[in-house]
Image (cartoon, rainbow, N blue to C red; front, side, top):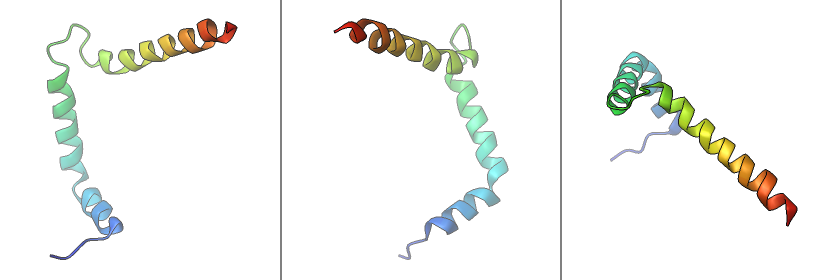
Length: 64
């Protein structure tokens, strides 16, 4: 079994970029289909987590 280099793997992905993009879009759509906010939740969730980290580490733990 021959091992491919990293550049060959990236080249193969680049050659099939339309397929990769379509499968990625399909997976993201399917994973957020049942939620109320849909695809918007994919962006909102990390932002809310960031706000929580800022509050906890910025304000609460700063005073100790």
